[in-house]
Length: 321
Image (cartoon, rainbow, N blue to C red; front, side, top):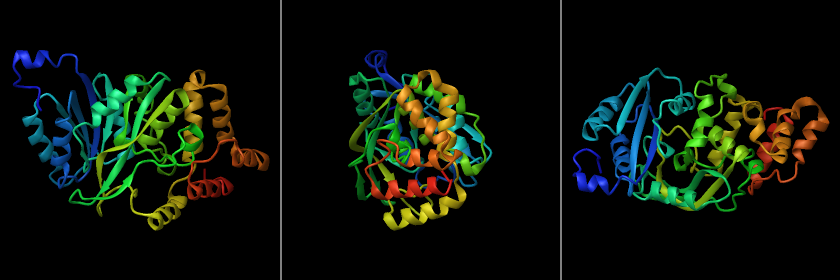
């Protein structure tokens, strides 16, 4: 529901509404992007502002966005950039988002239920344990938005140790505070080698776990569309997961230890002693066999998934963590 064109009376009723800046990186997303943007613009009981960075699309994605910018004048902004990959593209958006009450990430081809944002805000504002980040389950859908599976984060262990085994939380479900956004913004120009460049959602989630806490909602408010052009591999079964992990062993190295060092170097004074001890164990796991064993046997270093726990320990054993 666009802001422009409201009567003075109707607008006054919404002055106390929370505002949410939603960051989206696009790349050749013309097929589904209209549907996703419409779902973001029509969130219930919040004012949504969408900032898009196009990552060098060669189709009509930018044309689609420009058309919707005219329709929702003042609520959508667009940055056209070179192709730098979704990790760097999303991180760059952290420094471009306007000041609002809350922040969120969005994939270009999902569809959000109308109450996604307000349910997240309500959940966070009821918390009293320094929760900086809200994350939820999601609904895996096919190209036609038929739900094919549900990921309600069953058996998920809500801890820093678990998150560093399996970053199971989907960035498209995140809603986070300005405090977390401002800290994550420190990495908006992070440009490591591709092999150790962390994903935007893993980095933001890691900061939240290290410096604050995370609220987990086991409900799902995102129809997470899976199709042959999807960038990520979630929701495609165990066999696909194993194949993806096999490929990542060659392409992705040291991500977890790199992020652990970034956290300690930038936020050390905000991290509790027990969390700092765990992160230091990760940073130094390659120092020798005792250091490696200490991490392998670290108390609470499990995720609730035997497969994820095993894969992580293999990475540690071969110095690929």
